[in-house]
Image 1 (cartoon, helix red, strand yellow):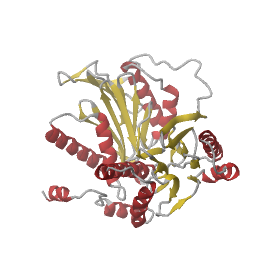
Image 2 (cartoon, each protein chain N blue to C red):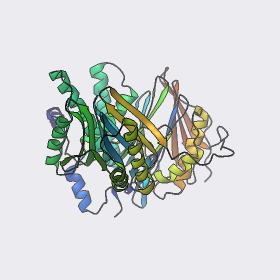
Image 3 (cartoon, chains in turn green, yellow):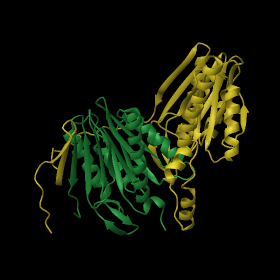
Length: 204
Length: 275
């Protein structure tokens, strides 16, 4: 048997731009070498300015998303205001660290826009938050996407260019990973709108 | 309903609800993924009138560099800093927890935090967890008892010594420290020594790399120099950078969610899929 993180497969990537931020994910849901569906959702809208991308064991993706959804709904009800992306990023880290000795097998990426500034954070499965200035990857194809991102990334890209670069990085990386692929979805978040683009890849 | 009641009763701290499921999965043969470690070089040096601490900035996940410029020097109190090696999540969260705990204590007692308080609190927390909380820290600070430097191991052992190094690059750094440390260094000499020790770790240890961060703590305050030395600049620039034409990546469908109007609409034409 392979590792727990390789059971379902899947890859995610997040990239910062100029006053915009993008996340992309593949669409495969598999059980080891079989593919069950090719339209599995891995990026979730937590709030109008926060997206949560999850990779890892799909059951934990589902559970962790439900947990975060509950947290933000309770927050909205208690505080009667929206949650800031940096607050949500810390919330995810704490929620993961709370289960330090019985972790969720997910590696999340949080993408948000706070006062026009892009916020991008990634975590290992127990809540070590790292917020870098350029891009983050997660999932089985993550290491391959790293290579593509290092080559294609430029700082301060416009939303249209960012959409192209992140899409190409995701597709190039997933082409080298057997457990990811079967399509890709790119989400670009700006102050005015969220654009969702379903990519045409080799097997769709 | 039962779940909600259980949730309300949770008193904080660690949540063990997933442990049984994870044990069963491990018994079935699944291998867990490694956590981000900070395979690190960290050093501390006492000088005449204060403490200098330095660290590299690489965080690894297995053999991949997860973070090229992470911060390993954490504040525990305005006069006490910690440099951490070990499991990155544990370091980050434990340091944040102790920072808050010490702040609360200062508000209650209206007194400056002391280094030996920090050591006692840390070791009494770590020991019961039998080393499972993977934090190896160098604690340095200046208080009413003068400058102090101690190292704490994950099992809860602590050692006071005028110079310390920890992490995977500690042996390389210790070589420099043992050779060049003297009592009664000046602040500048101590900073130079610490940087040299970290450099040894960066170049000789695969788990350490990128840049050097330094913090110098004296009675007058804290001098934090992030990335005082950088060895990891890209050695080449792309001659002709990649420029992707806009709308070049073929899309099956494209949607747009307008935030102000809160409406979802489809934009562009749906592409035909050729069978």
